[in-house]
Length: 260
Image (cartoon, rainbow, N blue to C red):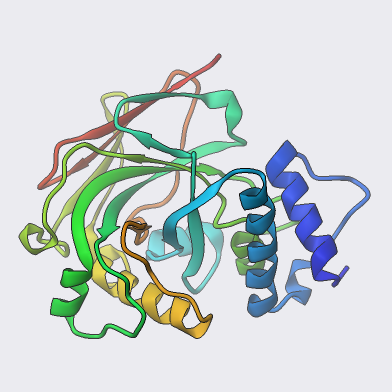
């Protein structure tokens, strides 16, 4: 299959039902990355028509840990969607996610439109109004064979939800490179990394996103959120898990996954 509309229908069905229609198949390696992004847009347009709204963007596959986990070599871009953005302390239904997994995230609130390339770090900081800790939730399943950049892109980065912490700081006050990021499952440490592990620093990821969007004729807008990627691998979530993300300069953010 190479008809992008048919592939988009397949991808939408997977999102909508969390099942792979048996009568449809596609060889992911036959898609270019440009075509994969076209499919992503088609699927998201279907979701927007159904009442969802674009809340911002995510960058994925930004750390060596994630790339090794997926066997991929480059970052990808997806969109954050409402109403799947939640506040700190939320209780979520574990059964609503396929092979539920989480990542720790910095959450950037964009305070101005960015219609052009931004290179200088000072200008990048000016783009961000505040930073919060976050937890990204995933459907951690590749439906069509081994993980590929193409399926990761058209599935919107296997993104399912985002929890945004209450603790918020100005970007100028944050030591991004040396910021320690821990993920705890209950009281036990599940993963640990540093901000520098995100493409050499979260601001570099933001710069990559701005350039990527410019190449596609898009740009960040005031009020949107951006998550620049995780410094650690995805962490599997089990029923009844309480997940906590701890960062050096922030209060913790938590989410509980109930087996309802």
